[in-house]
Image (cartoon, rainbow, N blue to C red):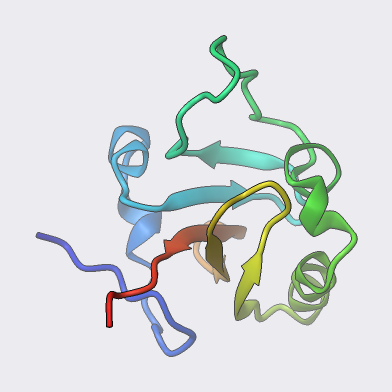
Length: 128
């Protein structure tokens, strides 16, 4: 089993070596973005709540179209700051509107490809 570190201290970027099919099988949400926040690749880890097919998000603005809740938050602000500074590696734990669980968001630069990954992982409370 491959273990992907999910913290700020992970210096390697093993995701740059994965095929589209391998990205699709990741156990957490993964979105690859361009410098201006357009979606290059993604996996869809959430079931379709509406019952119909989801629209493809390749080429769409992640912060303006896909995850509008993040577009006006510190998350988008940190993405832009990290892109401008050439070093993006931040982690947030947050609540997302209309989700019954909190998520951990990790944004990280892919220096070889010149793109940026955003990982979204559900946080679960362990029973006491």
